[in-house]
Length: 269
Image (cartoon, rainbow, N blue to C red; front, top):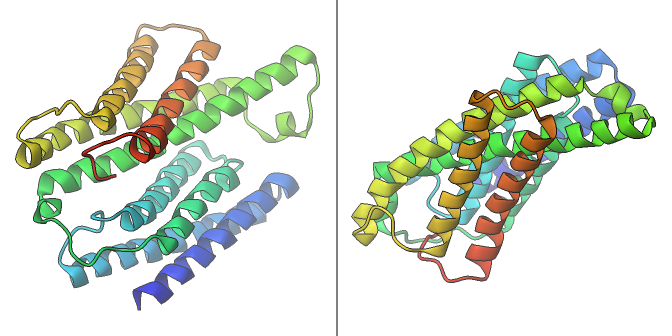
């Protein structure tokens, strides 16, 4: 049952991604409205799958890497939809949903373990995982807006204003959208790390074990703390904030790919 529903969800992610890319290149408002409708239905169906599975298994749907990937795909979709509705700009949907589609695909090919440690039912873990995933989704959006901002600045500087310039909002709008995404992500990451510290205490006997994965997560928090407080201090450099957002997202990728994949970490995923 769940396998079939997961495949349907994955197919809808593909459809929504295709529709958003069609709008990006064709730029017809009817295509944007259709893409938004498909995305909304998709997110509702995906949430339903998550809730039903959690009830059937009597545990949070974040206790394995496959489930975490699927939840990440949903969080990315939700964060993007919120940005689209607030900004009334649909040009970024294809880029964001392409990543969400990849996560959903990876969730299908990862095995789900039969037996899980009881600690994974800890409420602190559930709060920590959900908040961190939503935070990283916000950071990805900030990263995307920052990259596009730098690309547009380069086009303006070289006086080569191509089709990308005509399809994207202004640099100022991209800067504001990046700032909002990073700020929301920072608040969620802070809450997630606090919740995670209590989970770590219950599992490892320390609020902050000296572990490479946890240390790298703290580094990510510091990068975005600098970002948020520099914004509050009215620093005017758009390039500085774009670069900081990109550095922060690279730190996240380092924490997930290098530290977990190559290093030795007590953190499950």
